Image (cartoon, rainbow, N blue to C red):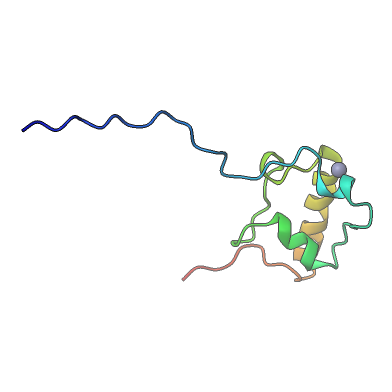
Length: 87
Ligand SMILES: [Zn+2]
């Protein structure tokens, strides 16, 4: 008995990331990019402490720049890790 071969489904998968059309800082004026506030900065770094690129975070160029600067500052004063050491 022959089984009909299952064809691989056409690539209809949904986008893995929620893409925002506007950046969250433009949307929410109350959100302040503050290098002393790791709660906000952590939205924009990976678990390993890398900065999430703009295409994924959905930030606009202006705010992404501010985030980058803030994260770098936070690292320098040891609020955020440079990278999480993996043993
Ligand atoms: Zn923005």
